[in-house]
Image 1: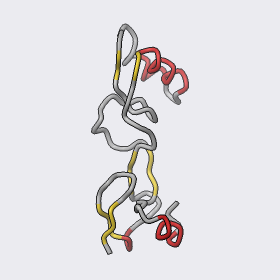
Image 2 (image 1 turned 180 degrees about the vertical axis):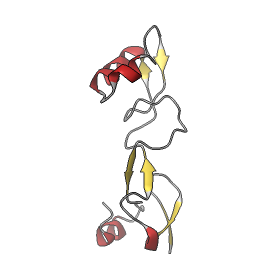
Image 3 (image 1 turned 90 degrees about the horizontal axis):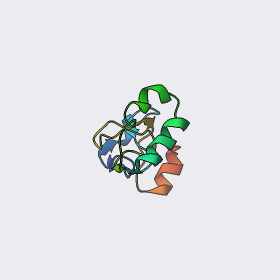
Length: 96
């Protein structure tokens, strides 16, 4: 049975769902002042790599709040089960 995914909005086959089937971003693509990006960099696992993206910049930036990527189309930073919009189905299948 094909179901639409809640996290990545694509269709998936319930029979082939697995722990690493879906790549998604758990937060919003939003952004804000460069200062917000610098705060994110300080809290990240690899600040030395991400700091280069914000040093010397001013004003507003758009980025994923979960991973800091500025590319809206970048693959998700998390992996997990595909999750449908049907909470009862998700619970019954153990997808959450």
